[in-house]
Image (cartoon, rainbow, N blue to C red; front, side, top):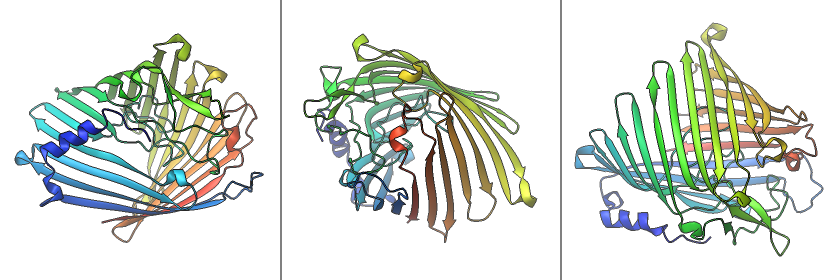
Length: 400
């Protein structure tokens, strides 16, 4: 993986500022995860594997200074996979210093930032690169080098970002059943900007609440985290990262048992030849029913609709799709949860089902189950390559 000119600057800053928790008196926590994944459908491709075992380790070290007003954090991450060599990777999720003073917060280093309110997709979440090696749903993110300055007001906050350096998206190996249906050149990406990885991106977000409304207005200008692909000379496709400007809006309205949610973006490409300007949105609701079965569990009813102005030309999965789901939150001591949902493409009725369940065991461990099933997938649908990639994932996380 190529290193950006800017990649080392946050690390240098932190080393110069000192990381005393490496030497004495720090708070620490650790997550060890054991994972087993099974693909029950046999593939016509003899190179494709049908199961995978993996282990990951994520420690966190934290040290406070200056009467608690300054916090230094280091969170590395590592994954080993028995089958997919691409998934054997490491990352720095957090490596930063945060200083708090009155209504101001300043952070420098590697960090993760999350924007969004909807359940099935997060359109506005753009600061961090997706860790495609970790999760099929795009929820896992790589650490992003940044300088972040935030000013809080009565019921709102303004946050400014300087993002010096870009992290490329990595892709699963071709023998992984969840990999894209074409070979990808991970080593020679192309960029819209002549600065390539060293382009400095900028972003801002104004967020807050007014009564029952939580809101966020965001702006991003820089290198798109989502690559397009162009043909390469050896038959592989080469990732291409365009320069974009994106405006985002996220809203959540809380009204008794109802949660109304919306995320919407407008993305413009700085070079007309790099992509088609578009608008996209996802919105819906969650309605909660409390105390069912004599208080045994609470039930959430979810529904969200996805829209993309590019329609069938969209390079993303969701462009005219409906999501419906059920969330079971049990009131047991183990905090058991189940989320089951279905995505249906309104154009061709391609369908995918997803179930996530987890439960705490003992006092310092959690067992999780995840399943994905693809059904009636149309050959023209963006997920057609996943038609034989149903899987079942069982994981056990230890916290210590």
